[in-house]
Length: 338
Ligand SMILES: [Zn+2]
Ligand SMILES: [Zn+2]
Image (cartoon, rainbow, N blue to C red; front, side):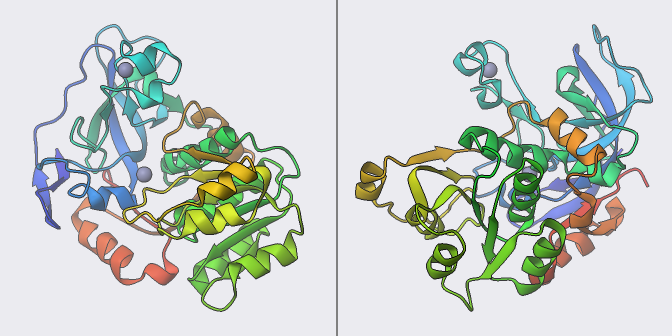
């Protein structure tokens, strides 16, 4: 089959590679759509050893079942949770399998990813795609599910005031999901005008372009004291967690969603005095089904994030669009079986 292979540094190449074989308990999926995630371009920073077939946001069709697989048939349309777990470690035994200590994460080096025509995946990681949802939209159920998890972690309640820091795809999805879950006022902050406008149009969120407006002043004006119930850091900026923290109400919650490469200090006095919660959130813990239902009912729209879809052989066009047209691009995706 054909696959995109990461060979170290910024070197990706289209190659002919052996077809994956589904092991016992696995299913072979023909990949119809696979989106590009920022983390796919950071394999080196995460210390992963090449060569790797990247990709973990995907949808496709079941083509073959490994030994012992029941309850799913060839021809079914599916999405996959990329976090394959061992079932034996401390996390797996304590109900937080998504943090498995021996995870084989699709596209990370411990398992081949989805920038390929076919991928072998643990059957328990598959979810059926509702009829109303297309392959491209469904491929984004993984990023949607991890965003949904942020609010699960934060215990979001109806009417809560939410601040989303970040106007990338994860900012967009957090704003959509907050609205779908019944949040009250939602403010999304960033500095890419066109992306912020699209977020406002789609979600009804208030937007704050931090190049033109002071975030602290704007949020305090829109959400008067005691402050924001939940702030989500989805920008990756080192300063962002602290600016979210300052706007929280007493016992409010800051969710650290992004991987922050250059972290800055948090005010421990503020955390102490306002009894604030600071939580990390990085993977889905059972949010796939809920997200697929939100997509099917039209409460969230992931297709509207996808700005460019290309066949495997044009993958360079997709990566270039991400790097060169960041101000107006949310997502690019591959269609490996077209
Ligand atoms: Zn991702
Ligand atoms: Zn485990």
